[in-house]
Length: 299
Image (cartoon, rainbow, N blue to C red):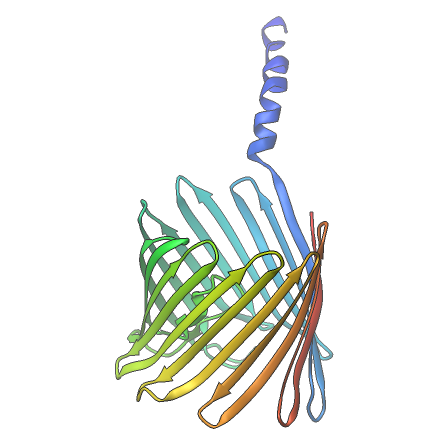
């Protein structure tokens, strides 16, 4: 019995260290999207994120008036500079499983993503296919960054540029080369220049150029970007203006194409303490396109 008493003081001393290693944080959010039409529709998305130590889980549940539309779950674990991620998507039946690994030694980083997906309509006889995405990069931001993404059996890899777990790539039938994406960025404390080029087996898909600049006191963000298609004709151009006076941020994004005005988006965010409230509205010359509003609580 006496030999076991030393365990209690050791545990008491180790508890703060363990608590720090297993620090807990997260967020809970709701997002509502209204789409006008005949008939109009509305989706509600519930997000949950929890970080525990060097791992975590993120969940997105999408509901409509008809019931469950989709469920996305991501698990991740970070150790020794290597990040492992695994994701499951249901719509509402199984549609995709993703396994990703990334890491490297500064200034280089490598990554790979394997996808198993179902190309059949939701809850119908499955038609499985697989895809692979290879990533290579040099540098970091702020500073100079070069990033390459290569997709086999996968399209829309442009969705991975923003590192948003809810933006999905598109699986296609066959294990063939589909897209190559080259992304270059040069950024500082208050400015950012970037260019992105996408190639397919047929040649150039599109090229994109952009610049952003931030003024302080108050914070004003200015941005402009444009995309050209495979024939170097203008596909679209966007102008962005954002103003932040704590705790309120407002922004305006305007898009044009070769024929003129395309759409306008106006949004607002209120961020105080651990609460974020936001709304955005997009419309064109024919009227309303969609309205989005929601909130997020951090803990």
